[in-house]
Length: 126
Image 1 (spheres, rainbow, N blue to C red):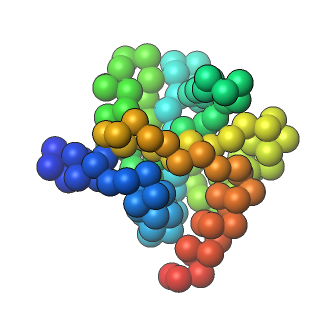
Image 2: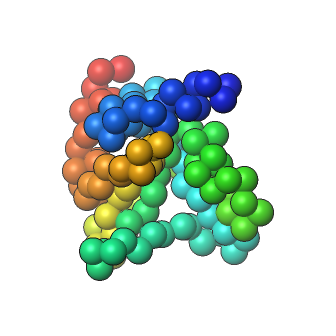
């Protein structure tokens, strides 16, 4: 992905990035998270007393978010694994999902079940 493409994607509105996420994940059948050296996934605590798991549709976008940090690396999760294992776990842990932030700093926050429904709807287009 070129720098221009990256900047173009990150310049999309929050809603446009969510739609881009659904489309890319539907095509590629994988989701990207960030993990540390102990393979623990990044979870972010928001000011509103809730925490969320940030997700990206492509490795380059996840890597860009952590500015190529040596402490974090992008890790792929297959879409079937995410839907079957991660969604129930996220729901049980009451962990929200944050779809990758853009240049504006805005973030689409959704529940695991809502994202699952949207992804399944997107998959029906393929």
